[in-house]
Image (cartoon, rainbow, N blue to C red; front, side):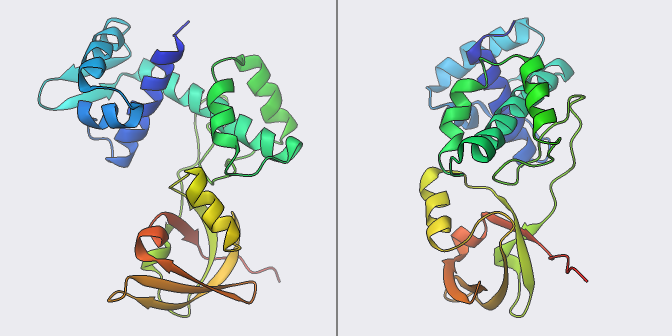
Length: 223
C-alpha cells in the first residue's frame, strides 16, 4: 500500500500536469506545491520511479504513469467525497473542509469511500465544484469559463472555485457568493481590473485576479 507521502506526491503531480494541459510537472513546481526543498522532490522522484508510478526526464519534468494516474485519482476521489460528506452531514463550511479531508483521505478504505459515495447519491462535484472521480475513476470534465471573461449583461451561475484557500473562500462567502450562486455581470473594466456583479440584489466588486479564480456557466432557467 502506498505511503501517505507517495499518495500526496502523486496527487500533486496529477493536479500540476492537469493545469499544464498534460505537460510534465517541473520539480520546482512540485516543490512549491508540496512545501519542500527541490532536493527532496528529486529524491522522491526516484521512489516514484522505482514504484512505476512516475517517470522523470531531466530538463523536462515529471509525468505519472497509468498506475500513478490511478493512484492520484483514487486519492482525489476520497478527498472530494469526504469534503462533501462533511459539508452535508456535519454542516462544515466550504472553507473548513479541505484540511480535514487532507487528514482523513489517507485513513479511509475504498470500501468506506464507496459507501459514502452511495450515501451522497453519487455526486459529480465537491463543495468547490471540483469533479469527483467515480469508482471506475472516470469523471466529467469541468465546464465553465472565468468570471473575468464575462461581459456586462451576461448572467452566470458559479460552477467552480479554483483558489480554495480558506481566506479566499471566506471572502466569497462574506460577499454572498457560493457554489451555484446566480448573478449578473454589471461591469467589466479591464482598465481598472475590476468586475462588478449583482448577486441576490447585492452589488459586489471583484478584482480581476479574484474573478479569474471563479469559473461560471450559463444558468439553466426553469420553465
